[in-house]
Length: 266
Image (cartoon, rainbow, N blue to C red):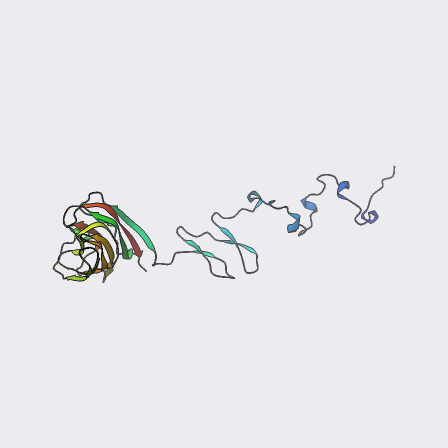
């Protein structure tokens, strides 16, 4: 019996339909390189399991020609930084300085003093100190501040401060200013307050040792509905500031809190 061969020459162009092809008759060996285009892939057809292996931590970006490239893994603490259009991003260290960091919050509950610590001149250049609804048990007490250093509370006489008060209310109103020199031994914040005290101060260490404080606070005052004004102080002594202590001259701090945020060195 003669063998009849079907050659390419006897097959008409476009005569073989999909119905005439056996199942699984075409495999990858028969594909022409570059013959599978995006339109041949169904949506969501390529899963992670089908992607080539890569390096742990790398991410995929694109170069200026639009080709995919791997961005090398950074080190712990680095952030992905854009280099602008036409350039690949990269993992880089955070720029030094300018950032802020929460240090501590101390909360009163019948406390004789509130003493936030954690000040560190090798890490921070300045501090934001926020008084939140400080209430004193005695309406006749003064509210004061002292520096804290490694050896404890700094009690020397090198405190200088001045403050201004705006009083608006029932039996007292007007503007008052006060200044106390370097013999006080403390920083005076307010007096005769019988309601919540709010305030915010910037504390800066100058010349690696001297401390400057400036800010603003308000409070209810005995005999008035409002008391507040600007405030600044200077501690001119060689000390390593590790904290601040706030205290009344009588009674205690019934409630409220003080929060410290550090501004990092440049």
